[in-house]
Amino acid sequence: MEIKVERAKTLKEKPDQSNLGFGKYFTDHMFVYDWDSEKGWHDARIVPYAPIQMDPATMVLHYAQETFEGLKAYRDPEGNVQLFRPEMNAKRMRNSNKRLCMAELPEEEFVEAVETLVKYEQDWIPTAPETSLYIRPFMFATEPGVGVHPANKYKFVIILTPVGNYYPEGVAPVKIWIEDEFVRAVKGGTGFTKCGGNYAGSLAAQVKAEEHGYTQVLWLDAQERKYVEEVGSMNIMFLINDTVVTAPLEGSVLPGVTRDSMLTILRDWGYKVEERHLSVDELMEAGRTGALKEAWGTGTAAVISPVGELCYKGEEVLINDFKTGELTQKLYDTLTGIQWGKLPDKFNWIHKVK
Image 1 (tube, one colour):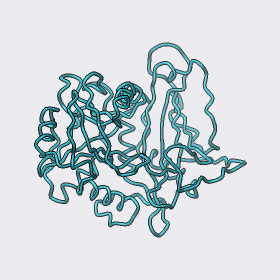
Image 2 (cartoon, helix red, strand yellow):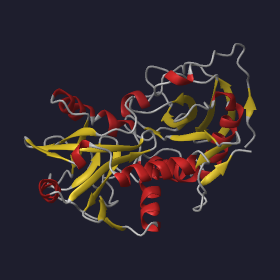
Image 3 (cartoon, helix red, strand yellow):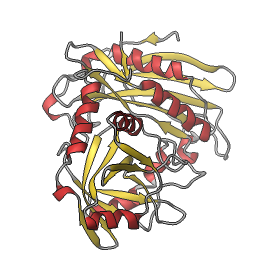
């Protein structure tokens, strides 16, 4: 791509790296790329971070043609900048856009845009322990008009935010409410995509869980309200006896990059891994008998979120005495070790920013 650059006249003061939080601060510049049905993709540019002006009839505001991604940039011990499997995010966004009848961005252009912006804003990559630069690419319909049909104009944007741990408590167990009223996604729907509507639709259950004293929601399948699917906005895994079990990818579960990476690592370590339907009854019975040794959510933002307690229809089961499990911690240390360049990258997942 030919990427034009407009430098911000005034640069922001960098935030305190010991108190970053997540998604609170944004860098000086953003990447913007336009598409319309006549020109295709055009006018790639890096511009000052600023509000996006839209017509009140812009179609994304009415019909929600919008997708997004999330990945991170890291500094290795020598100070080099690296990304983690950005081609997987590029592929997933293309699949998301295809499902929502949006313009499909070529995967190589997605990676090039991310790499170029990260390189331009590399002074924003924090160096304190457990910190990184979170990358948020997103795309939305920009054509003005009220009428339900695929838009003829789209905008692809990337913004960056230096972050610490997604959860303030870091890698610590959380309490999970198993939801049997609301559902997250159905087969044939948009569950496998990263579109804003999936997350908006999850909020009612999230609020309900918090009202009962729980941090997150464990979703069951929409058809039978029987099989475990995701936890909050993360994939979830369970160590039952000596086997790691996670939901299969059949259209209602997001194909997580962290999920895929952890399954690869587990198999490399010799663990038995099953991607299968796990009923909530089987899960709770495993919790009652102690067969459920560990459980953890996985995702780019938090990497791993250990689960210490489950509640289903008023019954509570404790997992590993509400402590972070040995395997959970080992997975977190291994994956983040690869991401920060502290451990060997035997799977060739690291993408160096040159």
